[in-house]
Length: 166
Image (cartoon, rainbow, N blue to C red):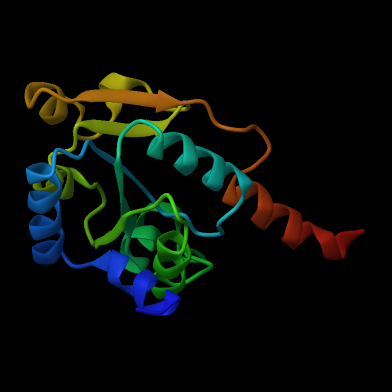
């Protein structure tokens, strides 16, 4: 397979993800799951995802669909469409799978993947992370990773919008 095919193969639908996770479990892999919009991929995202991948052997990223992002972030978002966001995430060597979800939360996807480790950014409180109770009751753990200050899609969007006002 060439590089484009490899990247595309990491973008999976739910039934394929279920098969992939089953194979990984049979092979004794430790599955890490995180999710987000990843609207404009930036240093904060790359740092966070690299650190998340270090918590196991396989990293699954749940990606909010365009409609889900719009409901969560407002009508001007996403800035980058789901196809682009998914491809960019899947192109990262430490991301093993990307799965879109339409819902406002990844709860059903977390139950499908049943990760060994559920990860969110340090701006979350563990007891408020969607799926924390399911993961803990399944024998997994929930971890937060500190975020790099000054790197968020909203901050980047604001800098772009304000760049013409100088």
